[in-house]
Length: 313
Image (cartoon, rainbow, N blue to C red; front, top):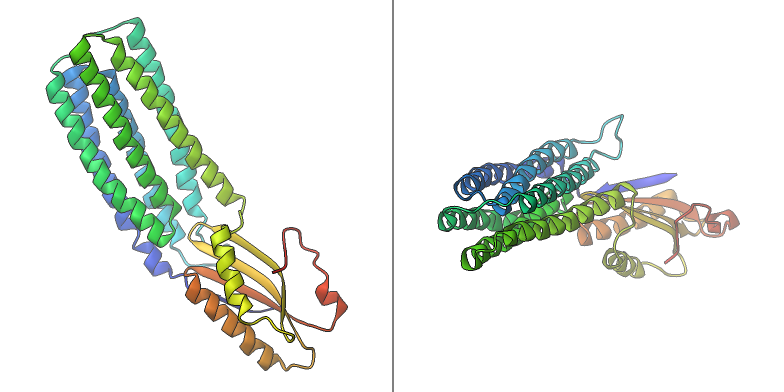
């Protein structure tokens, strides 16, 4: 039987992360307005591609808000492990929308190559685009730091997407500037296509990360090393650990294992030992849930691992 489980996750703390999603929504609306204005002024398809990506940013930010709200809910009868996996849906859908936006950009750019149009008032358009990029840069840094600090895939994905927007906007500025210097209108469309390729790369990466999370990937090598260090303090002739299994579920790290102790120990003594192990793991790895199965050391059946994916330390 599972004798104990501990976790440091706090739904109220997770709920506070929605303020970062609101910040992302605000900057998305701001940049959409700026970049659309820049496109209308210049007629640049490169600047239009930037505006289209900002619309995707807005959708992604709204999805992040919704899923962060769901993920912060406490466990219930239908979801006994909590709702943390909801974050993977927002990142997965955002990655898909990025790919759709990239396809739209390529289509528009190819059409402009076949039917070229001159750019107008390039200087004004570039100034507006740079202003939008600076806003995205600031929010991207905030989101990525918050995502890393709180182990939130929704915030991290949204932040990386905004950072990609910053780099691609820089490419667009270079493309429009090259048109101004050379007069070669085709350069604007070529840069737009390169922007789309970069967006595709980001979208595929986000989707792959989301799928890995939904498939219950194990914890990183770094986390496993921390677990090993904690358990090494307790392992001796009276304690054997095996059948360790881990998985990452958005913000929560699930850890389960079997603890084998002498059969003549009392339940209370065994419980005290595994409670210390659980407490140490929670201290070293915030937002983890630990499950330890207590078994007698001298029983042959206790040494048979029959669950796929488990391993000994």
